[in-house]
Length: 434
Image (tube, rainbow, N blue to C red; front, side, top):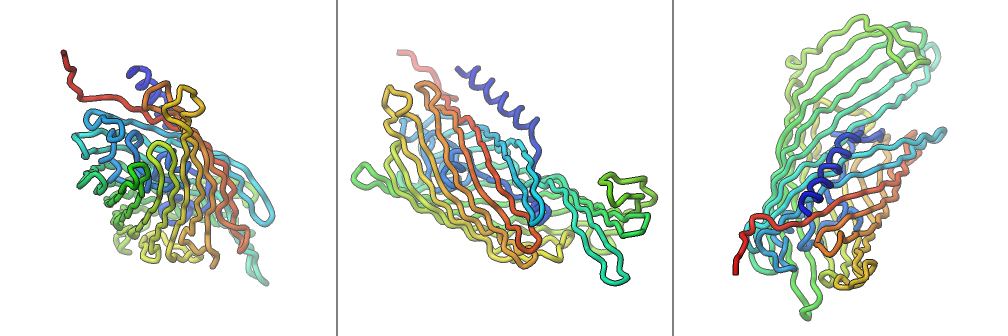
């Protein structure tokens, strides 16, 4: 069994790594790129909420959940959970005058968690934090004798995250957890400017190598009622990420054709002296996020819950990359979700399937051309048991829309398919001989 599980994880991992394309969203032009979902497929299917915790699934958002691993099944020591997820995202990008389609396939996360003793668990893992992948142009019509100008923008890269978590049960119902995140990656961008009737075009290439830490604290309180029902409450604080960016910039001229996307011969270029401008090494500050969750349900039977998150993006700082048409304000997310299992003890397979669904409404905190960029998504999916074990295969789907065609912006319609394996085994357990 272990060999089969290990083989499945390796296949899933290499498939995700090989297919990693990041994003094609034009909104990844801003900030540190398009922020990726930092939660498991199981939680994504419930609108992305992290207030619910159980004994057999990793909860990437909620480090206090590691204290619950194995508890409901009596495996308070030696239970190990390892999980990996991939996603396929089909996007339709629409402007006021045109429409295009594209798709990306990504590795979502790799994670491992295990119990050290009763009410004490730890986890480690790797996931993407943000992705950059855009390619678009803007045109400025000349007035009078002023020429027409075309700006072409492209960017690649993103940030990844390595984390370590620990969850401790202060009492049976009160759990505390903390995650230490190390974030790292490179953001690269280029702007090419073409002026009407001018043979040469100018380019501006920028690159930032970014790294730094942040912490995620969680406190869960989950009292029982009538020995059957459970109230789930959670408060989580993801502290301000103080990142350091080491920057380079190169400018120059090329031979370019306004009607061709292909650059011509580079004629000259020079590196900008960022030391003299105080921009060689800059601070990138991502503000603190506060999340509060509340839910109610019956263990291994059903659950309904909701969460509210808020982040003061007005405090976001990145002096090297600033945008004239962008302002930041408070970002917020409201999400609702839940699950239902007909009968987890049944011999009938369909009754042991976990059915999940949710909805998410997000204000990104970005004002582009004085217009809010919002995101709305509906999620649903199933958790399919693997035999009679505690392991399962999770399939999830998400339909949503982000942005708008107003104010010369882009509206994104997306359909996302998620697949994950959540596998459980007993490690570090000594054999007993009667």
